[in-house]
Length: 389
Image (cartoon, rainbow, N blue to C red; front, side, top):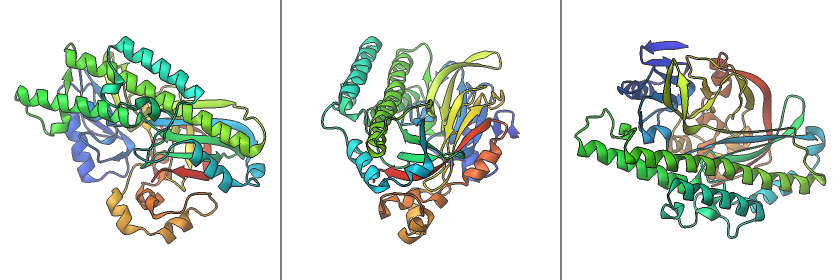
């Protein structure tokens, strides 16, 4: 841990100057209390740094929450042993997963499954109670539930240090959450322009507690966060079904962890109730289970929080990027990626070059930096990887 100034505390041993300056800008906002905590995976983001924990008093910066509201991870520990699982037709399993869960941006379900329909009804009731119609943002939001997306979102079958099989995936609130975020980011920026509020970055525009715009954002933000959580639950149910088909036996779940890493919640820190925005960070309160994935081809971790008060009970959410997507595409080729994915069943395509493991920070360095934030309980290695183009 390094205290960069009285408003910024840093856990990242790998931190470039642009990212540091961006974090300092966010930390300088007058309503940040007591300080911004920068996680080990910190890298440049839109408005606010990805890998930052931002406590705000009576205000929220929508861009600091991010556009994929509620993005996060879910993992399930099964009773299967990796040794027996590797003897299955893993290519057939991958293709079955790809057929049961819509992948890639703009790809959604054609019909609602029984489990998705129950979750959609729950979300519909929640939206009605919150006083808004999600169809204003995405007419097909009901068909988005149970879809993965693209980029760094993934589905994996992994084995841990005891050779137990885990099911693991990463996704968020899809198109509907993005539209909600963009609408409120635009509203905050318009408000700053209307009242001539000077900002170090336009994406640090904020909404003030007690105003109708703030209340509307909180209501829709919470809905999108719940959508993201149920979206992961729906996909996990489908992943479980695909694994049961491949294994010829029911999955016996001994642990399921579902955690956000792009979200805002109300918490108490240093004697004050604040709005805590974790943009690329997870809740690491004492004993809380969390998930920290590496890149494709690298280890992931199941952890429990240590409740570090200076980190605002938070920890990193992943490896964090070293190279932008365009830079990664210029730097790496398919042959190199294929070599790095040796021993993993995956869809070989140049579409994933921007997800090359070396496009990210070393997850080993990130976890070493996070040693006072979380306790590692399980280390996972992929044997099947599924991604969207």
